[in-house]
Image (tube, rainbow, N blue to C red):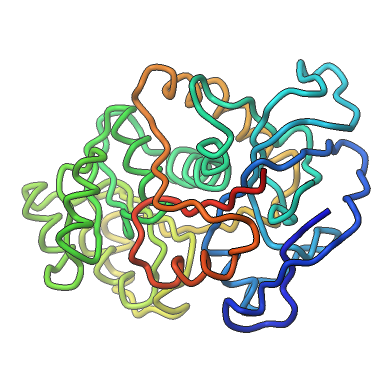
Length: 326
């Protein structure tokens, strides 16, 4: 099969087209003939040598795919060979064939193409797990999304809005702020020339937001604590702004705040399978109802993975970048 491998840690050009054997399936896995693969920030970190591959996972990049089931023990899953699915995987997505745990596979939502469905697993698993499971965003509560124009941000805004929550989002330009507002955010906050904490407090009559989804960390954390409501929850899923922060722990104590975080890739199949079931039951129907839609910024052919990573690193995109394999 054709695949994209990381020849050595480095810049996008270290991504090279190669030929690899098709994956050998392990117990509980199926083989997918990949039609499309989503590109995510962890792929970039892996390429740079900053995101180690979990033991036993493919060294090829790519954490989400959509395509046709061609092999594997399907048991009583309801799937059959030839069905189109999308899947969350630990690696190996940038290839013509990819092994995926059966329990991490989902049918394509009603009306979506494989190109569109390939943009869903990584962001929807991540947002559901962190915003709704870990941070427990509840009815009547509000959400601030940092990096609202990213794949994760677009998903968080749409999903929280579809479920009836008040949403605010930060973005790095006036155009991106308009884009996140078009997706459902009540207010796009330009972090380059606005203080997001001050804006949030003004818009909430000084109450603050109940949950913050943060991909930045670093010096954002202190300001996020300042604009959380009492009993608020901050959930950190990336460290783009650095791993260290200075905090007023008095606020955490007095106002019963929760600071938490998680990474999805190393979690066991059983954990991800539970998320998949929740998504299938509670989220996938929202696509058919028109309440959710994939947002694709650009599609590249598989052999142009390096160019796709260059675009990802430019942060000029809104939504997802996709590799078309078939």
